[in-house]
Length: 275
Image (tube, rainbow, N blue to C red; front, side, top):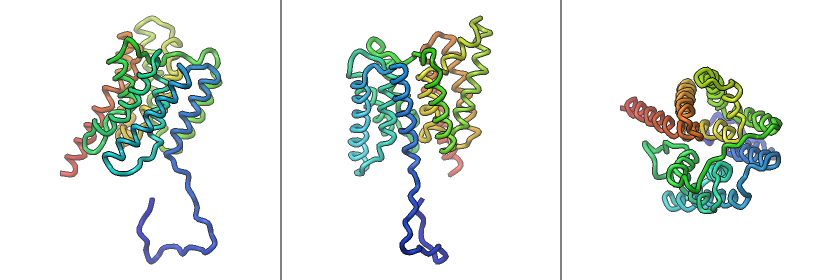
């Protein structure tokens, strides 16, 4: 953070090199690249590298064009990279155009669907849900497991935990995972399924993206930590309802509904406080 100079400022020692701090905006791209590489090497979960690269390129180009046109400046591309690679991993289609369209929708939604200066939907979540609803005949979502090899999941969870702890958002993921586990027992009791079969979805690559990126997105989550925990518990509850209704992509739909409502409530309360 750059502040104004003061008379009591510590003098600069000549010849000393300025300390460079690591830009935390690069942590999410590092983690999602790790998810991509580990998942592809160990399980091959991508539809194709070319489709994933198309989604990344479309997200980056769209971000550059929109921000330059609206604000006359060049954006930091970490967020666009994360959105593009998420689309490349999550979308399943025999065609190429859904990857480009989903990435473009995700980025544009940040600048079109805004309230109080904030975009209220997680971009990738909005883009993926939009494609699942608008083009169900040609688009599906990633829902496979890591297979019998738990090593990639453990590696991703360890790396992700360190990064989320560094940026102060680990509480969101931990709360959601705890809620999911508890509600998995409830679902098992209600459906008669084995408890492990209800818990197992959270070990899949779809959930790695969901718990480490979508629900922890700083731009589309509420501010207070207690409120963040409440919101993800509500998401887990609605997800359970959707799962009982046989919705395959229950977590995406739950975040799509709960996330913007929580953001709108926070925006409204902030406006009332300012008044």
